[in-house]
Amino acid sequence: MNAQMSAEKKPRVCVAIVSFNSSATLPRCLDSLTAQTYGDFSVVLIDNASAERPGNLLSKMAVPTSYMEMDDNLGFSPAMNVALKSTDCEFLVALNPDAFPHPNWLAELVSAADLRKDYAAFGSLQISASNDAHIDGFGDNLLAWGPAWRGQSLPKDGADNDLYESFGVCAAAALYRTDALNQIGGFDDRFFCFYEDVDVSFRLRLVGHRCAIVRSASVDHVGGASFEGKSELAEFLVARNQWWLLVKNMPALLLVVILPGYILMQVYALIRYPLSPRMKGLWEGLARTGDALRSRRAIQSTRRVSTSALNKWLTWNPRDFRDRLTKVTRL
View 1 (cartoon, rainbow, N blue to C red):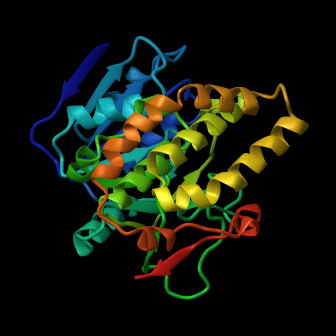
View 2 (cartoon, rainbow, N blue to C red):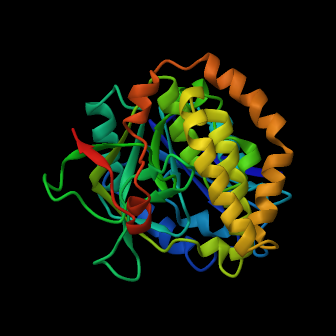
View 3 (cartoon, rainbow, N blue to C red):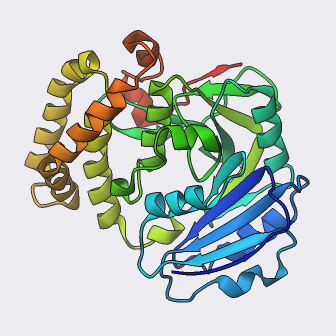
């Protein structure tokens, strides 16, 4: 790992960007950061062994920057933990290289965090970069049996500057309190990517933290730019990580309730797609259930919320997942 750094004072915010072959989108992402109306932040770019290293793109950055080159593709979760360990800023912001913040994005996130100190994570309104009439994401939602999704509709009530509570936040463009991330041990390196942000939101909630979406903090998002042509890997990771998510985090009573439905879903998938990447991911997840159970013991021992309080933020209607409905409550 090689690192370059320049900084004069500790800012309140560290914006972490994890890149992997992101040359098509990263320049616009960095340009969007330089145009922010909020200036008390630094940037750390962590490159996961891209074919073309992007370090030269930072030469025009007007804010303190650091650049780290990984020798291998660590995945999103381990790279975010590198950023977490390297900063002592009050806030750590995750920003995908294919997300392009609007000028007031960071100012709105920090303002919301200052206003609602009882919340640990703040997500953004994600707008499709190819169609500004399409909502790419407004809060993370979790179906009780494991599937998660970004809400793709806006609440009909409220104004553009309102805050909304959601189950979780999408790490494509999200602000976290650094101390809260450290409290739960950061991201789970084993997830590599996919569902890693759902896992973080779940664990934050279990220890009593809450998650909010800042409607006025918006980004244009391409989505999946680093995984173009790799849908099989995505299917593998999603199936594996879904299982680990449930085993680690779901309270015992709810886990007992959902297991029959989860098993039926997997049997159906096995019959239809016996040799699919999805099933291979599930087999790996099942094979390493022991690791997840060991994590579960530690996670559940620190749980501070009741089963009923957590259940309020789970979704039990599969049609909501099918339709990508948004489940939020206005604050």
